[in-house]
Length: 452
Image (cartoon, rainbow, N blue to C red; front, side, top):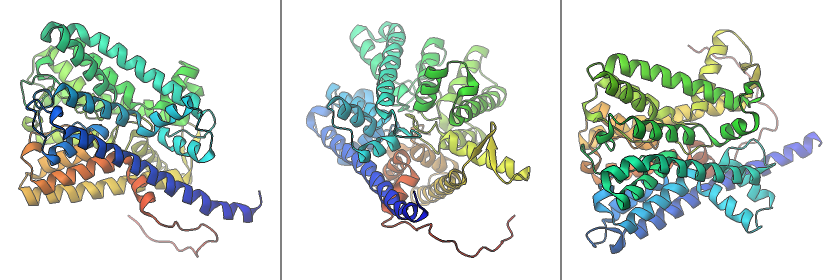
């Protein structure tokens, strides 16, 4: 291809990117609107009365964006129909609506166009469009298998506590919610915003739940590498190596702090389980065994950091993503070592990836700052709690210090927008809103600036 044709092709690719981004936004918004309508039906509530429109919108957004923040107790407020709607929204939102549509279009033999394949590539964070339908089948298969195994493993504990009918239903709901990193549950609560407080010392329930969260949050491409290469780590994609390394690092460092400092007064067994679970669930599941409102400020700040990092790209989790933070950390380390290129695991990371990582970081921190100040000023919420709640919505986590139902309407609407923003992604929203994108034809004169 000639340089001229390449230059002509760039605007077209950018238009496709903008069009794909708008499609993503529209699909998620449409699903939220449909979920809101269904949850407003009288049949959706235990009382038989239509839900408050804001409560229905908040719950639908939290479900589709797999966040987990709630303004009504899911177990006691919503009817079996309402819970079924919430569960379907969680499943579609966790897999990514477009991933589900991609699989259905494949079954209908209607997904061969390049435009559709590019859209599906974006939905799964795949590196190229080749084999995209094979990847979709794999994603759906792993999801069904993990959720089924998780439900079966949880059934003994839940059937023991709630009886066969409620126990089986709770196990299925809990397994899907955990794998999709949603954090919404239908369990009776000892503490209003600590969904698994009754299982704080129950190792099987907490370990199964945490494993579902981790598997759902490490990303579809990581699964694909593990399937293809097994333990031959050298053959993994760079993304898989970075994800696994940084996930282990985050879990180890947060567990060590929580075990040695935050939960030092607990009995040993409970201390081990709570430290492990509270290291896993902020990224980004939202289940909890403790009251985060009683956690120390340093503990809440650590949790905020974990929430913002989130899971991996192309996974059921939210947040800025492990890969984003990893690229920033790797780029910083390379600058300190005076390297001209960003290198990790003997592979060079493209400059546009580094720029995107820094852009995502700045966008998230900026939005978090605005949300924290607005909530603290408008509703008089203490600054750390306001930051905690804003980060939980923005990173689609769902942990709370217990203030969500008492927030004002404007602040709840802000959290709804944060959940939507966090699920579709900052760059997706920015690309969709850009009517035109700058051309890279030609270069401006360069000039050095002093930084630092």
